[in-house]
Image 1 (cartoon, rainbow, N blue to C red):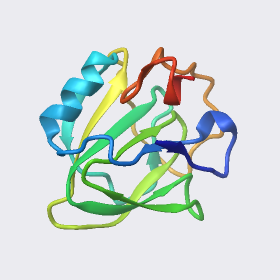
Image 2 (cartoon, rainbow, N blue to C red):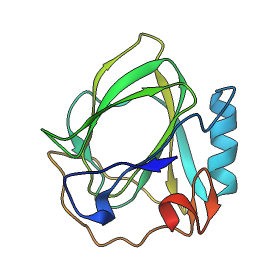
Image 3 (spheres, rainbow, N blue to C red):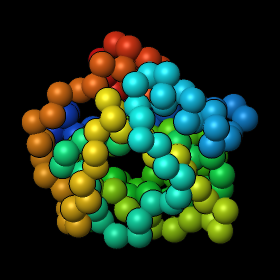
Image 4 (cartoon, rainbow, N blue to C red):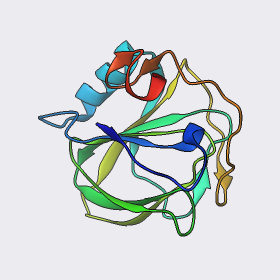
Length: 146
């Protein structure tokens, strides 16, 4: 994985793990997220409007298809995601699906059983939430949690 630049502060920099799951499946992402303390998982897609979560960070694991996703609000960078990729989205960082294949699907989860809110809009620079103890893919003290 690698860190991607964002318009906002370092606290809002998303992290994309390319090819995190070599044989993509929803069950693999759910298990990996859970073993690293990210829970309340769900399966679906990504909304096609700018939105963010002020109360928690979020991880999305792509288990099918491909999509173009904008990060950081209107004017933010657009990234191509495909099955096997995972993206860790810090609290306050807006994200939006620009386009996707018909089979596009993700598993989402949140650190420490957090309850997500849903706020429409361009995001907020830094809601002040600490980084979780573990990156959802790499584990404790690495990646997003470092």
